[in-house]
Length: 326
Image 1 (cartoon, one colour):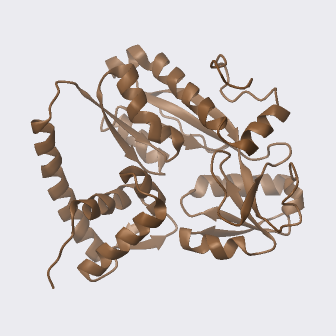
Image 2 (tube, one colour):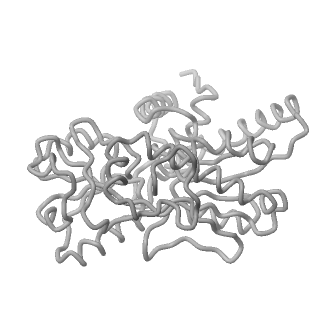
C-alpha cells in the first residue's frame, strides 16, 4: 500500500511526540482536539499501526511511532530550514516553551509586539521539561503552570508570576449541586473526581492534598478526551476545571468555596538572554493584560471575581485598563 502521509500529519505526529498529549499537540498545530484525534487516526491507518500508547506520563511513541517520528523530524527539519532561508526577514528568533492555554495562543502576537522578533513557540504540558531546556539554552523562555507544593523553579531563570487562579469543578447539568454559585469541596466527598490525562501528576497531588485537608480521600479517575462524554452522564461526577476553560457538553462550571485548589502561571526567562532581559518587564505586563482579557470572557469566572474583590489575579501588578478590579 502506498504511504500518503502529508506535512499536516507529520507536524501533528511531531507535536504529540514533543508534548506527550493530544490536547497539547492540537494546540501546537492549531487544530481542535476532535480534528487532531481524527487526523492521528488517519495517520495510523495509513502507516498500518498505532503510533502512540497511553501511559501514566502521557502518550509515548510505540516502536512504529518512534520510526515515523524520526522520519517526521528529519523531513520537517529540512522543510523548515528551507522555509527559513527562503523567507528570512533578518530578525532573530526567540524560542519559548509553553503549557497549553489562551496565553500560549497569544504568545506569537505578544512576542512580535514587544520584542520585534520571530517567535518559535512550542506547546506541551511538561513545564519542568521547558525549564530544563531554558537552563540548557535550548529555549530562551518558558510560560508554565504549576500548583502549590510543586512550584516549578530554576536557578537559571528569572521568574515572574503572571496569574494566580482558582481551580473550579465541572458538574453534570443534573447534579444536585449544579445550580449552586459555589460548592464546598467537602460536599464532593462522595463524588468521583475526574482529571484530564494532560493535567499531570502535580495537579493530582494538589487535588489529593486539598481533599485530605477537607477530611476525605477522593475517588479519582484519569480521563482522556474520549471518556468525557460518558463521564458527564454520571450523576455524581466532578471534573477538575481551569477557570478559563469551557466545561464539556452536558456539564456546568462551578467554583469551589474558599479556593482550596489553585494554579499559578509564570513566565521564566533565561537570565542571560539580553533582549528578553531588557524587555522582560513589558513582555510580562502584556501577558498580564492578555490574561485579564481572557478572564473577562468567562461569565462564571468574571462573576467569581466580582464576589472576591480582594483576590489578586496577578500579585504586585497594577490593574490593566478596561478590566474588572482584581
